[in-house]
Amino acid sequence: MLQRTLADDLDVDPEEIEIAAIESFVLPEKDDIIGRNSASIVLSDELPNGSGFIQQLYSNFDKYINQCINPKITNIYNHLIISNQQCFDASYSDLKNYRNMNFHPLLDWRLAVGLLRIFADGNYLSGLKDSDFIYPELLNWLEFAKSLAKKMANDFEDIEYKQFGNLHGFCIADNYNVIITHPFWNCSIHQPSEEANIFTEAITQVGLENLYFIDTFNLHRRPGLCYGEIIKKIVNG
Image (cartoon, rainbow, N blue to C red; front, side, top):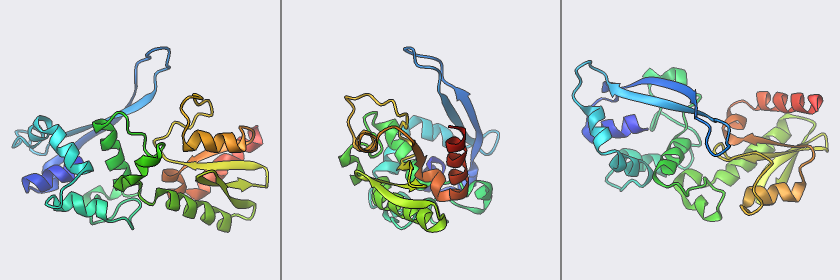
């Protein structure tokens, strides 16, 4: 999204801005927290002695972040993206193009905007606060999760749709509960009691026994694999 936003602002071909590397690494341990997995994305000018496009991004990073998360109507490319509420991942009108076909199943404009919003606001909790659902990337997310849960119930005989407070999910074989979560949420069952939110309330309602979580990113793209992974966990205890 940053690549396309920069290209649109500078009126250049997006291919002049390379996504040079995507790498994973482990963050150092901090305050008794075990190092967590993270990643880095490196952008560069396509030409070895480029025209300074990435320097422009670096020098005006806050501007481009804000253009992605709070676009004005004059920011036509970005404004059209957040206005397309019927799209729950990506399309050729936003992030997809011929060159990135290998990544089409992974592209998601809502997660792109959400991640950039986290960069801009450390207090943003991706929907864990009720007010967070006013943001474009989270509009209709609860309804989307509900549709995924009902699709699982239609596709698998041993699954029944179930609601957990304000969240949606399903029950397998009348005994194993699955709550559908946002990909950015901390889905550990060991949640601090003082951090009450719609997720902790859902856990409290159903209890911890035989409880599992699936995020919408994976359930939307590979429901069969998600079902298989839960069955493995159930079998293995």
